[in-house]
Length: 371
Picture 1: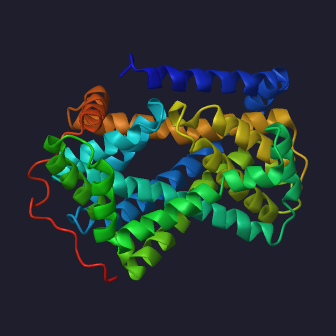
Picture 2: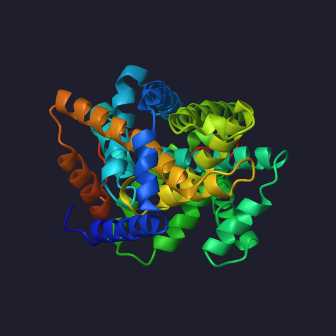
């Protein structure tokens, strides 16, 4: 894994963004802010973040249950290991690790599991965008958009479209594929027809597994449950940001705790949307810049860039380190290495090896009538 080009590209991007993060802040004041912070507030913040991961596990359980019911007790370690891998590997390769791990652990199709993870990412983005748009109805955010536009040297409407429309389109395409599986399969087979005949059966199987992963989207009830579970995921993660705000005394900067709560939800949304770009491990660099600048540019209060930089650094560390430590503990308990999981997952995806015995070979595309 270390020798792959993606790994070094991801590290290079992360290093460049971290350099930008550091050269655009007064390091002395940032260190002072870090030294003065009250880290006791990290304890409840991290505890609530682990609750957020529990809700993530519940949501994934809903996405997987048409393939195999898996208990939360068995699924939670797989989710944690997947997030640990994303925090350590570039290009969001942790998604491959999670899909491979659940496939080996529970006998679920790895391709179908990977599709459900992609659905999770789209649901996360849509939920965060919903938070932003809901807050924008009551608080002026045009200045924040303009500031980001100036930073990226592009008109802010284009920037907003670039970070919203792709997720909406992706969700729309997933719904179309889910509701019209036969047409989707036929279209995919037409596209791969020029390939040698020996690839036909494996590709048919992979397409079936892909469509199998989309089945939950065909149920309006299941969609509602997925979106309802996505809300507490991000509210509990925002609670970590909220308590880190107390660590840096932000409760004294804002007029009331309601404004602080709105601010941390916005910072959570923007930082996670920006850091969802598949490049650096754990979104390092993207996250720090986005969280800091959002906190500085929001109109509710005036937060110094050095304090905001310290806040962003501590929040990201609190998001990354517990998952890394807990994930490693789960792997040690199971006598498994992350290196083996990551290399096996990457090898299986790159070779296109078909999963045998995980789903009935007689699996066929169902009718296109919504459930």
